[in-house]
Image (spheres, one colour):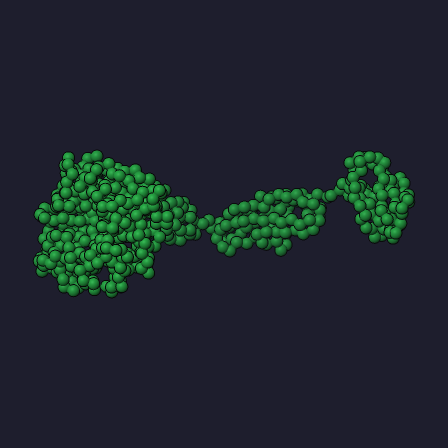
Length: 612
């Protein structure tokens, strides 16, 4: 791993720029920068000074309204930053809202299940809420005997809001209606959180569990929100003080090791890796990485370095660690109070101790926000494929057909005029800028055939005399399609549908059947389907060798034949209407059939027939 350290250039903006809203500035710095696909070129920072008021901005998050929201620890305020303003100097860029309860010390902030912003009040032992319109909702008092110092906060996969408690050594969860639960683990199942663990921050993991850091114990923990089982994982570097944690939404979580001067990662199975900073010393320090966030589009982790005037990045694929030095002094960018805004590709950082805030710009490869869509068209029409992408200008486009570049197709839209079947295939586009490229998903173009095409043809069949038979075919082509069935090459009157049925088949129906499909552009004739008609064998009458009345009134009928032959015996009183009396198979010859109770039967005549 080739780690590197570089410098960041600054531009100072006029001191007349102020945050708007309530007109209250803070003794703080807010850094804003776009993320870099690969660590390298030094980014540029714009500095915006504020009057000196020690509000100590802390955690920052992207709200459901597309704006950024942050806590002001000493200022007892929640601030809203209009992230989509035309520039950071724009009117209404920052608005501050004073928390109704005095001296609450707001710390962590997140979007809750109700679409409001939820935040921890470290000094008031409460969970606060504010709407995106800046209206504070009733606070929820945490039901602990003493102040638990709530800190990190996030929304869990179970729909509750979860938070850490620094001095209570427990995790808390609260429903949207304010019902609290406290968890330390289950004795005998997993681990139990020890006292003096210092639970700093918490985040939802890709496995649905909540993952948290134990700063004083150098451990990473997870809790299942359903069964509340806790698992703890000890870091290889003792005393490293993990502080902040974030998920990469795949199978790992990333965290800072403040004293260990490392960035760590842990899989959901508990496999830990550590990556030392280029500036790391051989001993534990107070100048290590502090806060952390992730740019999933570019595969980069961003972190701050407390007390060292630096920020850094880690390439998730190569694990390249790069540090960027801030030329100003006495700035402690706490990147746990950092968030990536995907709409403008900026990373926003709070700075608790500075007298300014920063606009931190670095390069980013493009991101596709709307993929090209597949199409099915007729020949001769026009087709347009379009892609929507964001990223630092200029953006360049190259369309591809089945993976091969299309000459002169270098715009965000690609038009094909007078489409033919040869234009069918998979279309994609590669979008690039000076900092990288991304290729869209494939969009399939299907061109219908205008001339009729048979998708399925009639099949040959063999049926019994007197049954029904059906022939069918499936065709495609420009509408309308017409059909004509033929028998031995001659049109069949009225047989003009895609299927043709013959009822009560006779021997004169045997022969070759085909179909002609026609439209305005041509016609196609199917292959022949042969119809065979089978005439079932006719039962042969048999003469009785003896007919006799048996004792008890039964009648005995004796006949000769071969063992295994099948017969039926019918009875009649008029030799015209016959009724079936019995079926049987002879086992010996001669063979006698006994008609029970025949003396009382009106049947006077009997016949036997050899069955096929």
